[in-house]
Image: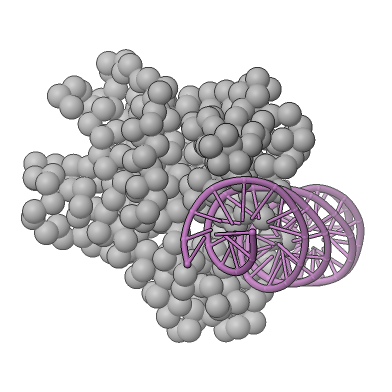
Length: 165
Length: 165
DNA sequence: GAATTTACGTCAGCCTTGTTGACATTCCAA
DNA sequence: TTGGAATGTCAACAAGGCTGACGTAAATTC
């Protein structure tokens, strides 16, 4: 607790400590997805739809290939999800003006409504966890998570962070 | 940064801050699973096998129903995974002595070998992240994750923590 | 202007991992 | 002895990944 946080000192990390962290990630991620999953079940949508809706909301007008890079799935997989969202009127797809090959994606009012329901639920849990742990813990939480990402994902993450409204 | 960590003060948490946390979880979890996934691909196993092997290693001699509770899947789903692991000689299943309905699960030498390969990879990433972030951040990381779990999962997590070698 | 590349959509088929429902067995406990 | 718990297993299905192949339109390059 009283040590330097700047990582110059090589920490002694036992396998035990690391294993606890691994299991914490596992169980916490379950909680992290539980509330949106509950909302989605019963609708014809799943976690994949949630992810698409989240990132389209985040970056209105983003292109398909950009979304592909962020989500890290194949275009066939994304397309299946996107098609249902478009057919159901949650997402609008627009030909690019500058480059007409690109499709720009937007949430419709209906899509924004679902996004709000999902993110409200997820934020509520995150808020409760943040409050329970306190601001210093939150800072550490974010630091460790960022350090755990693959470099490309860290880039994507930071691009999103900046772009934030 | 200079505030109390004990949660008495109600924090002001913007949707922006919370969203960043949500996205950090998403991208970090991808990194978290990436290395074991890479090892598993090519073998006949997947992430579900990893989880089973991990928790059997963790609690040698655990029963099927205990594993079921920890993993949060149906017995049919777990059984499929378990059967291949047993058939391939990675896991040994033993009738209980006290209660012969129960099956106690153990890793064989071969199973322990796979477990080691997987957890070495996962620990390496976790270790790097912990070192990069520093000990104070690590404490916060764990606090927030624990606060994010569902209560039953937190119980399971804590039971495992105590049981640790 | 022709050839190539890029962005996207789509069809078909496969795999893993989750689900529900039904049923059999074994065995503990009241 | 009888009900319920712990387990195994069969069948069927769905979500959401994947690969491979093909088509089209538009941009870019030669």
